Image (tube, rainbow, N blue to C red):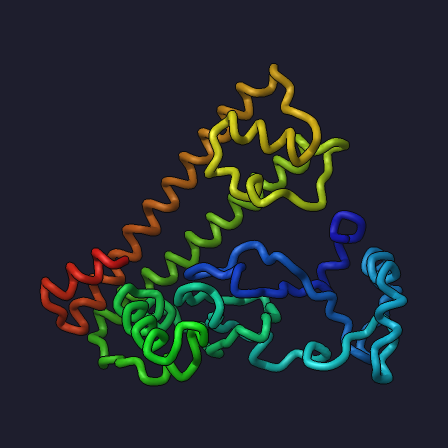
Length: 289
């Protein structure tokens, strides 16, 4: 839709689920919500959106209510202040405690929760090894199938930090969010390169899971997946170029990952000092995560 009409961006909102989230920032959303609230927008102003919705018109017209066939109803029809303002989000079904900052006004699945704050200190504390251990301990006590609940966060211990600790954790957390954005942007760029240059006709609406994880493949596995997914192999004279591109891209990602690891270690060291952990306790946490 965006390729057909860039104005479509005004009514497309990320729809985030637990599988999309990682620490610091959620990645490329797997789904998008066409946000046309009742009585506020005209679908004719967005021709690419209308063209897409027309393919589902019969189903949309069967919905109960008085909204027009293309308008939203129910829980997604309006945006609350919490949804549009920056917030920390997490999901009970994400598989592990992971907290991300959202500035996009994303809507999220029923398993999602939010803390309406752009608080980098809080974000850093929640993503630390120590708080992950404490949260997971509570989840295990209450039943793993329940996942992370807001009640688990409400009883977490938060000692009053020294100014130096609060400043260090806040600034380092901000840096981690920046690195996560760079990493996600890098992946998005590579996905676009693959779709534009390897798909028949120079365009692909979707990539396979393995191509989305291009950084985990060597050139032989990458070539096999391109052939399987697109039905055509990379030309032999282009293989060296793609091999070089993948190697260079992986090197760039490794630099970002190394910077992220060092930053997270710095946050953990501050947390250990704040909670006055012993060497044995620190070793236990570092061996577990």
